[in-house]
Amino acid sequence: MSGKSRRDFLKKTAIIGAGVTGLSASPAKAAPKNILSADRMGVLVDTTVCVGCRNCEWACKDAHDLPAGELFSYEDRKPMEFRRRPDHTALTVVNEYSRGKNSNLPVDVKVQCMHCDQPACVSACIVGAFSKQENGAVIWDTDMCIGCRYCLAACPFQIPAFEYDKALDPLIMKCDFCFDRTKNGKLPACVAICPVEALTYGPRSELIKVARNRIKRNPDRYVDHILGEHEVGGTSWLYLSSKEFKELEFPDLGNNPAPGVSESIQHGIFAYFVPPVSLYALLGGIMWIAKRRKELKEEEHV
Ligand code: SF4
Ligand code: SF4
Ligand code: SF4
Image 1 (tube, rainbow, N blue to C red):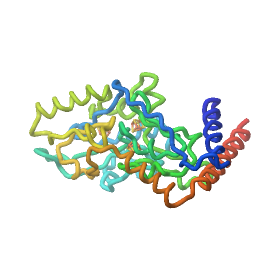
Image 2: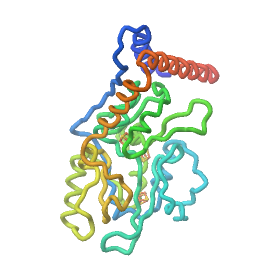
Image 3: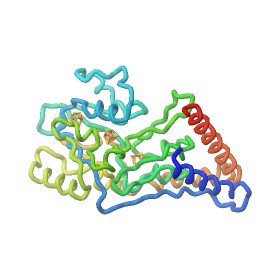
Image 4: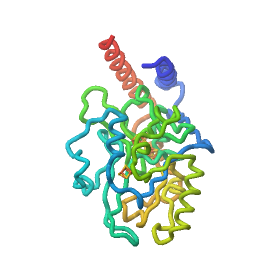
């Protein structure tokens, strides 16, 4: 565990400790760091340009040391018919849909975390492990995560996955917007590899202008909708399409930010299911076990 994470962990433990001693009966509130910078970055996914080569899937796995998996033959388009979802072994997947407006070609749709501007996962995380970063990425600190999986329940796009098959130290997994690359000025791995520039990385505000311009210049090619411009309060990843987005199985979520939903999940938990003091004690216990497990693992590697 890094020094900062350890300090943060101790700080959180101290807060929970105060709850355990019964000093406060109010619920433990997550303290998410939700930075909404005007300069935040995004990716524009133009599904009318995507050719379904799945290089992005490969690059994402490669950048995150994930296994290639059984369904992974890139010449084979069969896996794309299964309506796959991102999971702990594939942070992004490309699915195929029947042809779009004025085209005989199938519509290929890359799916990953949308990096919401008002992320429900951030709001749902009771220990503040999730955060929205200044560059637009929604990331999480694996050292702080206690594995409660509220983020899974809260995400309106059903994105975070959990390593259920790992007995030791299962982690939450999702697209991290290649944070280690982008914070150092590199492109996300999927964007860098896309051979047809179906993915454009740039300031979100500029991407919206580019998207509007494409729709205006090609009204027969696109539906007049930039998915993510307003949905759930806006997202860093934006989509253009030749088909209505509901036909591409994007959920119809409206424009209200989703954290309201996750906050009611939290409030429901605190109000009806678990008395706060017991919950603090439980969380303190879980965090102590997680910390001890990590320390033992670190000692094994010394
Ligand atoms: S690499 Fe680009 S063209 Fe290929 S599947 Fe991914 S988004 Fe589509
Ligand atoms: S899509 Fe889900 S996991 Fe991604 S930022 Fe939004 S709420 Fe969080
Ligand atoms: S941004 Fe990075 S983590 Fe997210 S889908 Fe692309 S390659 Fe994967």
